[in-house]
Length: 169
Image (tube, rainbow, N blue to C red; front, side):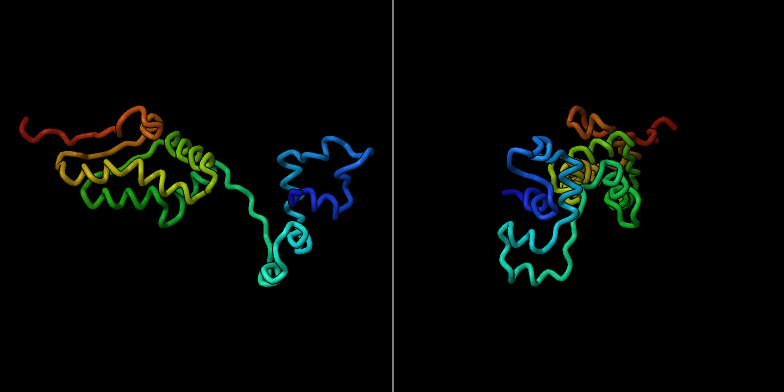
């Protein structure tokens, strides 16, 4: 029996029987989330956790999944945001790094599909930036690297803007 069913039984909603509503049998996404937010230690005990484990948890809490917008904020806004970290690494080589907004949203969507939340962002960005971080230090004429949605999707390489040639002067 799922944790949501245990909570339904505790709060008095019918989960089985002739009078049960079929829509209550399988809670929809938001209904399921509302039920999980009402979890109590005795629900965890009924679910199969051992009492010694439950007793060592002074606080129990339910976390909601991060939204696409929140993941984009995590990549861009904090002082040590991932995009800023990669930007500073390239800035040491005299190269500017630019991410388009749609590329950041695509990275957030990919992180959501992985199901590991913000932890997926670092691995996705590292995979995306691996070749750039390896190749750029060897090139002296690179001014800017631009990451777009097609780059994130693997449809094209990063857009590299080169410095104007000094030979023409």
